[in-house]
Image 1: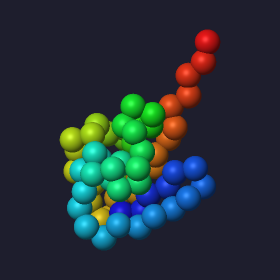
Image 2: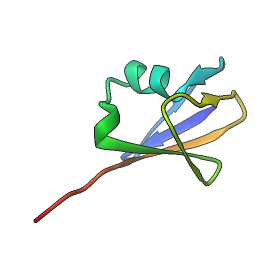
Image 3: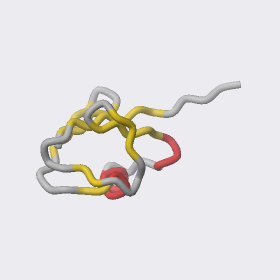
Length: 62
């Protein structure tokens, strides 16, 4: 799978859950959204080698 986050890219050749991916990248789940092939996914969903994954930082303000 190809993973993009803030202008950086990674490639992973084995299936991972969203949670496992975030741990590998040392990202806190509450700070990002994960989009697989154009659809928002949750932490328990599985990502496959052919997936295109974008990680988007959550921005909050007041």
